[in-house]
Amino acid sequence: MAPSVLADVSTPAESSVPAVSWAPIIAGAFAASTLTLILMLVGSGLGLTLISPWSGESASATTFAVSSAIWLVIVQWLSSGLGGYLTGRLRTKWVGLHTDETFFRDTAHGFLAWALATMLVVFVLGSATSAAVGTGVKAVSSVASGAALGASAGATSGPEVGDSNGMPSYFVDSLFRPTDPARLTAPGAEGDGAAAAQASRILVASAAAGEMSPEDKTYLVQLVAARTGLSQADATTRVDTVLARIEEAKVAAQKAADAARKAAATFALVGALSLIIGAFIASAAAALGGRQRDDLETLS
Image (cartoon, rainbow, N blue to C red):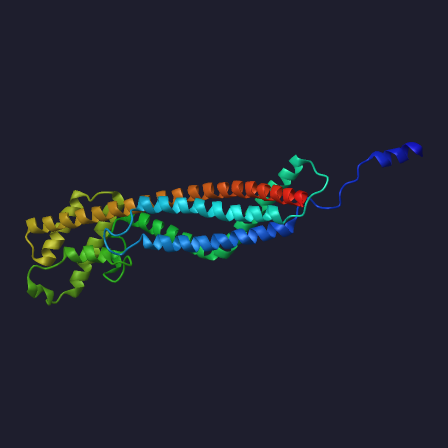
């Protein structure tokens, strides 16, 4: 019996107090998330001042992207610092712990406050962010599809069918503009519609193939000449002009899609970097706040 009694006395008892204090963590997280929302609204206002509908008045895309990246880091710095510091200052004093253990717990509490604040912000802004990201992805996909098929896709169903901006119908209509004003009121709408449908199919097939075959171009020139009254040379010039404009539209769409892709990738990387910075700042601020709280209690 004696040895067992001695063993029981020498075995240290486990503390019943948990190492995690959720009350200060929740308080710091709410403070950090609230400040984040405020700063995001301020940043949105500042961002709108950089955008103008007037040509040449808006900031460049590079300037806007750099400004957004810097503001994201500032938001994380301030909100994470506040939340972490409050978490450290509001906790109760841990008695009988080594200094290293106290430092570890404070940094862990700051990290947990940052994580909870991040989840709160995502929850509050989740629907708006998802809608914005979804719209951006759909826009990029539409632009990429338009670049692959050219600006003529969707014109096969007539002038009413096509992209929302009406560009396919515009290109096809421009092929069949008669030079004789009398042809504007001449009968033959069905013939014009059939010619437009054939031209649309030729343009779509050529856009998908990357170039127009000589046979298709010859037939398209003959079709334009027959329906508009242009000479063969003038019809060829008109076809070449429209094809050049379609190619320019394709190149512009490809550039827009590439710029959107790069902007999305940059924003994702900068967002991840700002979150890492926020986690570090929250942990350091919590350790600072906890140390000051212990020092002030010792002095008192």
